[in-house]
Amino acid sequence: MQEYKEYEELTKEELILKVQSLDRLNKELLLTFQKSERLEFGWTGNLGQWFWDFTTNEVTFNPLKAEAIGYMKKDLPEKVSYEFFTDKVHPDDKNEVMQLMTNHLKGEIPVWEVKYRIQAKDGSWKVYRDRGKVTERDENGRPLFLTGIVFDVTQEEFEREQLVVKNKNLATQMKRDALTSLYTRSAIIVELVKQSNRAKKQKQPMSVIVLNVDNYAKIEEDFGIMLSEGVLKTTGEVIKASIQERYVAGRYRDSVFLIILENTAEEEAGIVAESIKQTVLETIFDISKHLSISAGVSAYYPDETISELIQRSAQKLVAAQKNGGNQVVL
Image (tube, rainbow, N blue to C red):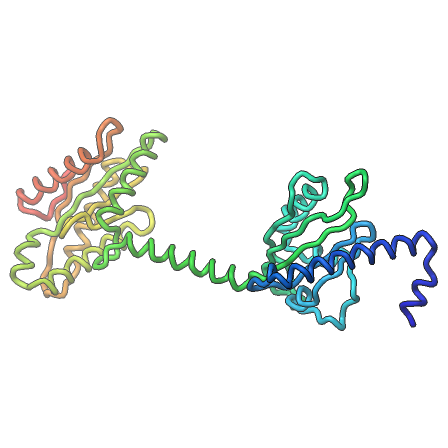
């Protein structure tokens, strides 16, 4: 009875608009039913369709769309304004949502399709994927009626983000040497190429340290693979602790390590190498024996190749070890 009373209070013009709106809605509902019979909307996460009468700004929607964000059917009228949903769109997404809708209403794009976050009643955020289009315009091209379909893709987005994190972690693991947790040979070479290019472009200094555990072949022969690998692991830990986050280090091959010192001159790099050498001397390894390292330090010259830079440093390392070891050569 209340509904009939509301109609009785309408003016003739308002009543005509109401009838026209209902007529458009009935036509869209009939088309929707025919499409659903052909299973065109049977996709996962489907929250049903919505219908927006642009002339009255009334949105008719499947209750699932509101229930998914915590609003029960009994708490809402049959129709709400367009702003009921748009006011709940995440601030970082709202401009894109509204701009795309504006572009579609103007006829600049054939379909309005967007993914956005929407705030639920409890304050949490859901992710919706919405797709709609103008289905009726007046003789001047102004939109009269729009229909669309919405999906709750919150779980899908969560799983996608988890996959991104897993892939990122996997990529990081693949760059790390299993024994020392430093970069692998390939990863440290890639990093050296990147940093040398940056140093050349920005005209900044860069140096490298190539270091080796003295007499490692003898250690491996005397103590076996397990204990000798423990030596490498501990040496890697010393290097990591010495360079912190400032520099990058990797296991170049066997017992040889390579450290890249960005924005660092050769003399300063030599100080870092000396510090590592001294720490290794003071470290007690699992083989209950004090060990030493030798290192070759070289500044990067913009006109040389990466291979030439490594070779210069390696030659200095060999000279240090031939001279008795436990030395740093610049």
